[in-house]
Image (cartoon, rainbow, N blue to C red; front, side, top):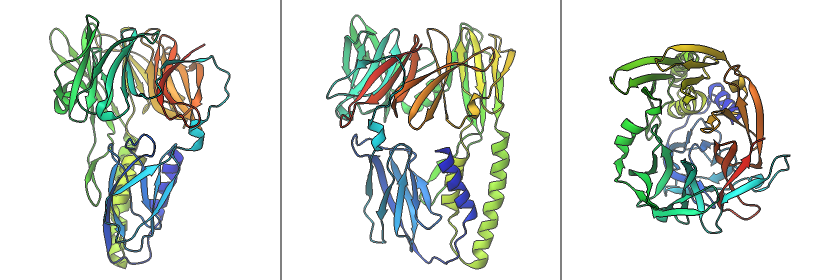
Length: 435
């Protein structure tokens, strides 16, 4: 995907239209999976033969300006078949585009690995998301999302509790205190299990969730640890404004007794800052050329592609591992280890993140306290254990299915959601024992 984005970027910066465009028209629509009907975000939508383009948002929605001479749109995202549709100025109705998973998504591959155990599978109910509740597993299951249920099971797949979710859920979120919340479109519900009964506590607003729960990424006996991102700005396309990726991450500790705050780490992506300045100068120059030679230059679309796809989000996650704070700083190529006083104890060099197959995802096993980096190649996910003393890869384990998602690690098992074979589109939870 990174290579595709790179070539799209090169195409955008090197291509200047030589023909004047008089008028165009606007187009709106949504993109979704043709089987699950769930929205697809970050789908690349481009207008063949022009500089116009955009990406779908978290609800699958998109809007863009269509030059008058455009003939068709292209829709593409990793793991799905590309789709082309013809367009014309008469295409005023909101489009609903359904993308099809690639055939290889449904086929198993042969890899020497231990047997995969099915933790939760039902011929009717899909698993949307899951999280560990102590040694038990909390799942969101659904036939229709507006009738989704919260289900608690143990490691033997026995059902401990079931609760109907009041509104359509998006995902589960575990906060820094270990509480699990059901994140819906308009509210947040905390899951609670007591006296053999699964409950949903009073809902919180999305605003409270984003201000209070989301920034707290870890805790220890002394402090809470908060993450704040900076460097974002609004990117305007023809119809809307989108926030760009951030290029600064700040980490702050809050002492549990004194409530004293301490800013102890800041990661700055200097390379992106310099590239943004160069990109602005280049776009200003192209605007001047467009005025001089009287042709249309769609700066909105080009800027949207560059700011949201080429300039990626700074990645430097923080974790509490065995009462020490570790920051996996993929900008400065090191792991920073801090004590409870937020004093830097050691810095370990790393280079695993430079592999293009790295998905910018880390997993920490809360039982064994091992750290894993997630990689993907040709749809196959592989977890590589990162030695916290040397920064090198200790061992790795591949998942013998293609395009699995929601990968987590718990007690030397890799958990993941996958679909069945051939025409079985049911999403169910499985696990794989690591060697």
